[in-house]
Length: 613
Image (cartoon, rainbow, N blue to C red; front, top):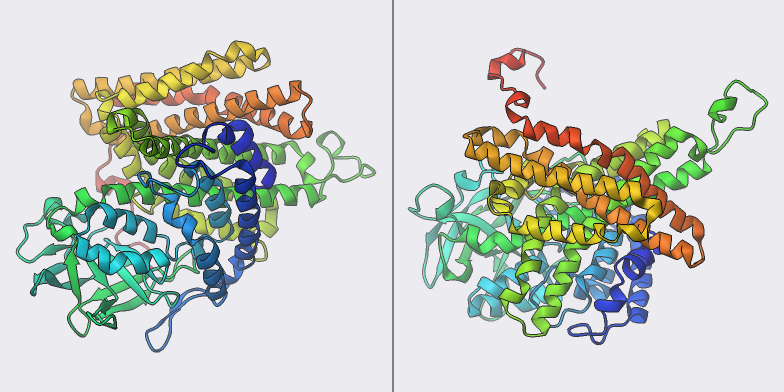
């Protein structure tokens, strides 16, 4: 969740979305009044989702005795309301090339932060459908689109992505699912897929699975993978649906997100499972799926932010109400009044760390959604790809950070939330322990965070040799730094951000030097460190930008001065406690040879023969 005041500040004061994102194509029919009405209705629905949050955890999705997937009881009514009132929004949330999206992506960001922060397990159902529709619009044959698009767009059907197998997780080169040609472009698909999010449910009539596998006799490796469209029930020529022999053989017993049916699916179980090649093309799955993967990673970051925000707000509310202990300087005075724990400096430290993480991550996602919104506007204006090149590169640059940095920070926030609550935070009576459990998978989902860091360093930045995206980022930060003279009260914070930017660019130069000097094999041990530094600089930029807006509001005597003072102090805290430490962290990248320590497997100590579970 996010609170209404924070939403208003983010959209109208920090982003000034009403000045550039509304009123012009393709959002010419959208004004601030309409957006605020939608936000209010979204907050009401999010409250309903929130009331089912703990219930869904305590009544997890499971397989019944008949082999049917059972999901939390509250989800059926919530789904009907979501389908009626919000499905339209989900359909265009992740689309960057649709000519007439309903709302700017930067507005959608705040709405979906509410929803996933209130009940992420519920939001997994149908969550892949927009990406599947986007993919079909770009890659499917006319026949496939005619068959699948309308029921998916109406929400009568949903879609799921099926890639992982027991032997193929992060490395899909060992996928064993295979397909034998039948006739008329139809294949018999056989195999078992694992960890399929919301892979089967009673909310929809049918599910379309995008299954990664190989056509019979294809060679091993990445470049022989194909994507098959496999419906749970096969649509016949007369419109009827017949069994396509897809079975759920297990619903995983998980640490968190228990309301989400995370399934193991068997294709070709008891009969022939029919499917067709996406676009009629084989051996091109990885190429076809790149846009889809990017959208899934952005969505993961949004879930992380939503849950982190909920954890922070719950902790803030608790700290204001919980009276315990006396002020440090009066600890031995039994006659002194006890105080709310929010007055204890260490509790304030934790709350400030949580707040800075949440608001810094929100600003990072805002960088991405701002660029997506600009692309939506450029498409509507009929501009070509060259005009969109800058925004497109920044979107690609921000994506691994949105996924990895935000999910890592969210885990820290959730852990701090338990600590703020003390012993009661460890109990299931309060949702903070559930936030922690639900967040934990997000650093693993949609490519582990190391994969994101490697993607950032190697693919997006070319190990320092392809630095155009970095140049765009640096130019944007430097343009902001140039305005520092107008904020003398924040001079120290501007200096720390400038130093942090130098640490970041210097670290990338060091990576390039290590590659040139033959140390490329050591780079994997510093990728996650580089991404974390990058994320901190981006978050610090966003927090300081918010502080500047707040300073101007204070100078103008706007109402709610405490809110604005909090923005200034949060940026100050982050700059002086996090950005100040970047030189030491960047030094580890410069001194790579001295930092990397390799062990043989047996040097890690006792494992075989130890306690087994």
